[in-house]
Length: 95
Image (cartoon, rainbow, N blue to C red; front, side):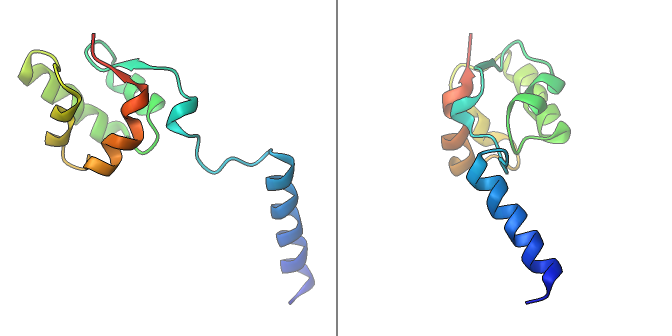
């Protein structure tokens, strides 16, 4: 293994060991977000894996429905699967 790769690997392992490297924040660590009042920007920033386009689709569906009443309604948004919903369920509120 070349010296450069060894150094890179060592730095990577050290960063993980010291806890300074977090590839993705977990949904459980995030603050709850109310999908019935949040803006598209707020949704995109609060939920990992949801960008501006998907957040805009969530807002569009919210407006069409007159507000969300069940989390499962998010399954009607293209790109949100049951797996995604299960991952983000703990940080979503509907008030």
